Image 1: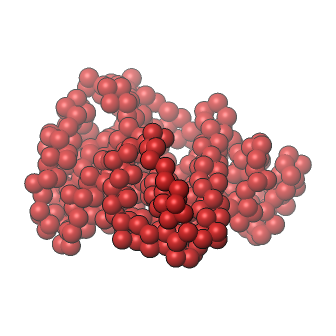
Image 2 (image 1 turned 180 degrees about the vertical axis):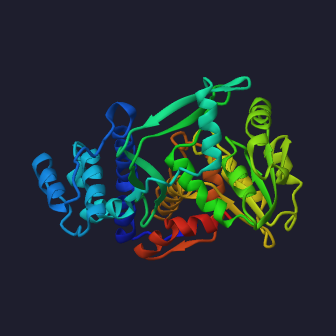
Length: 383
């Protein structure tokens, strides 16, 4: 990679590097605010926006003055309640906070009422959560609790803007912890609403990598546009529990085939066009970039099959830090300063992969940096 050694480019890189953890910290801090011990709940019983604004002004500093409708006011109240106690909140640009508010959503009361998969698991929870050799844990979200409820947006480099909202009535849902793999599967509002985006796009002969609690598999099988769903997973107990306790209750169970094997090894045998839609729903321990890139490489060049990766925005955000590290290293080399110490880089093989993909890239102006740190361009880069 070539990076022109100019003062403006160096300053731009420093600016991006300074914001790298800054916006990530916002998401982490708000997530902590929304934990069970720090739940944020709308406790104002009113349909008057003026009452909400007045109450908010009494409790906090200010309400976004651009809000014009009741629903947005409630979202603003909740989100600001969650983030108001963050000590460095004023350090975030107003435009960033506005993006968080713009992403806010109201979850209608009936959103989960007729959800076939959720209902099956709620019945299992009534029977002590027994799930074969595994055990389901019951989680409860109280009415009007603020929750992280859908996929984030990445409008600028390092701007990881979560989607918050609140549910208008109490909801209980399952969590399954696979301790041997340090993975947790759940059917909370975020899991359900974010998966629905992919379910809507499923069609024809479908391949799902990863069973989880079977939400995508069960929901996709109910679509008239889906003829078959093949799901591949390696976890024996999870598969057996699903086959015994969930699959028989699905209305279109005849469309579903479950294959117990290593997901990556199975994918190696798949050819372009074998499936109309391939959904990567693998849940690594923690944003496993190596696994994500491995799947991307195996389906590289596929044109007949549509391929989607669950929560790809999260991977793109994580990859931004590798991209900027590669750019900064190239800039240092152009300036005659070479640092060969790679000990601080996590997942060195991911860094080296990004370095290889960017080997022919050129940055001659500060604006070029933003292009390579754009989330959509990063996803294209590793495709």
